[in-house]
Image 1 (cartoon, rainbow, N blue to C red):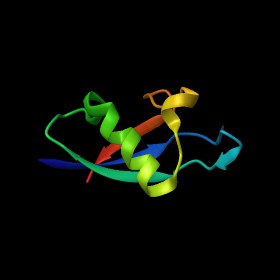
Image 2: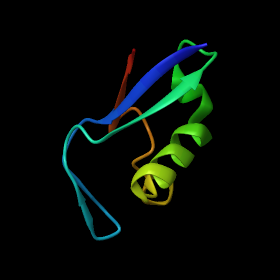
Image 3: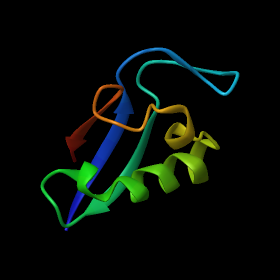
Image 4: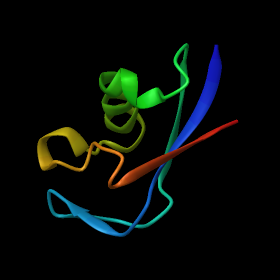
Length: 69
């Protein structure tokens, strides 16, 4: 199982909260692309930062990037 760091690619406004480029969370995944488990990424950002990227449409590879750690 690999560990990935998911980071924001650019500055954005999420439900009135300013989010800077590079805000990140870490998840573990059995897939080579962690976006195959998008709900896990959503829950990590909610748990760690309290940000709901899912409802604002930012929960995709256009706004987020990943690196294997």
